[in-house]
Image 1 (cartoon, one colour):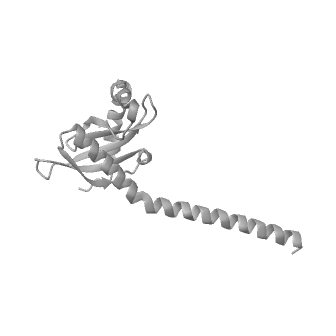
Image 2 (cartoon, rainbow, N blue to C red):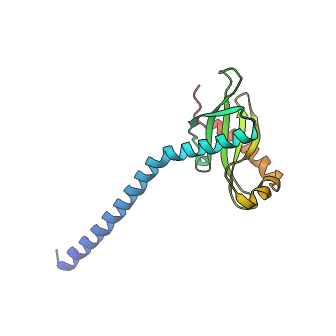
Amino acid sequence: MDELAKKNLRSYGIFLGIIVFMAAVLIFSILETRGAWQKGLAAEMQSVLDTSSDGKYIVDKFVPVDSVMSTSSAVYSLLKVGTASKDKYYGIIVRVPSIVGPVPAVFVCSEHDLDNPVFIGYAGDFGKVSDMIEFKYSSGIMNYWQGMVPKIVRRAHVEQ
């Protein structure tokens, strides 16, 4: 091999090593922070449920979703205070478009009535624009997401 080929091979090898190292760091960080992401979403959902539904629900377990919607939504099983343990309820937090950009909306539905999810509220502290978000949402957008929520829950890996 001539000197130019060795130099190019060494340069490409170093470049490829850097790319592989960066990809490994990114993959490791994503896998390690997945639990914190799930806990953070559960805490946000619980705060919305506490303020909007008189504390009727307690967020229980994360339910994985087998869909492309898993990047924009999360499903949790809920415990309803004062009901039998065999009744299953689900809380869904999904990113919906609004007048100020995408915001996380919380929906609740029961296993027996999946097709009628209830919009509970928006998760997060929006400061000055919170009044605009709460009162200026489009009914068409909410109708669309109320139709999508049952599809998301049906794709979730719900324990039988």
